[in-house]
Amino acid sequence: MTVLFRYVSAMMLTVFPMLNGTAEIVSSQQLPPQAESKAHSFASMYDPWMYAGLSPERYCILRKQGTERPFTGRYLYHNIPGTYRCAGCGLPVFSSEAKYDAGTGWPSFKRPINGSAVIVRSYSPQRSYTEVVCSQCDCHLGDHFDNDPKTNGERFCINSLALDFAPPPGTRF
Image 1 (cartoon, rainbow, N blue to C red):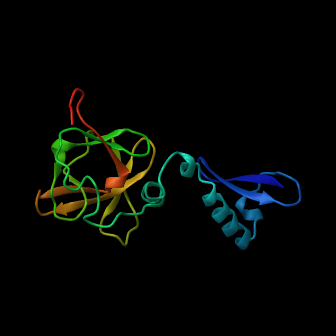
Image 2: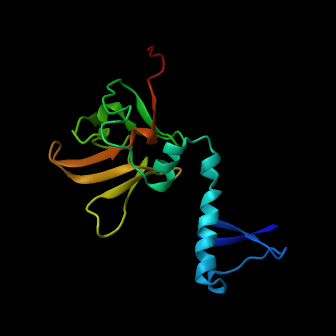
Image 3: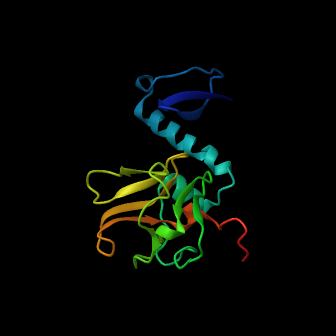
C-alpha cells in the first residue's frame, strides 16, 4: 500500500492510502465528496501533534479547540510569580502579574506578556467571543472577551492544560 499526499490549504498536508500502488498529487476537484471526507478523517489520525508528547487531554485542547471543565484547572488558584508558557511550544504568553480571579472557572489574564505572544481571532460570526492562539505554534489556548465587568476591558480566559508555568530564575518551591 502506498500513501497519497494532497495539499488541502497552505502548509497543511492530507494523507490517505492508495490501493492501486501509485502515488500522485491530486487536486480536490478530482476527488468525489466521499473520498474527500475519508481523506480528512484518515489525516486527522496521523496528526504529528499526537506524537509530540502531548497527553490526550492537552491534544484535545491545543489542536482541536477543546476546553477543560470549569474550576478543574491546576492554574485557576495559582498565585506564584512567574511566566505562563504555551504547552505546545514553550513560548512565554502570559505573566502572573496580569493574572486575576474573574470567577469564571478558568485562569484569567488582563493582557498577554507582550503584543506578539498570542493571536486573537474569531471562531465564527455567530459567537460573541474570539479564540486565543499561540503566535508561534498556532495552538488553541482559550477564549478572549472584550466585555469583562471586573476590568472594564479585555479578559483572556485560558485553559490550564494549554499552559506550563515557569517560576523566575532562582526561585525555590
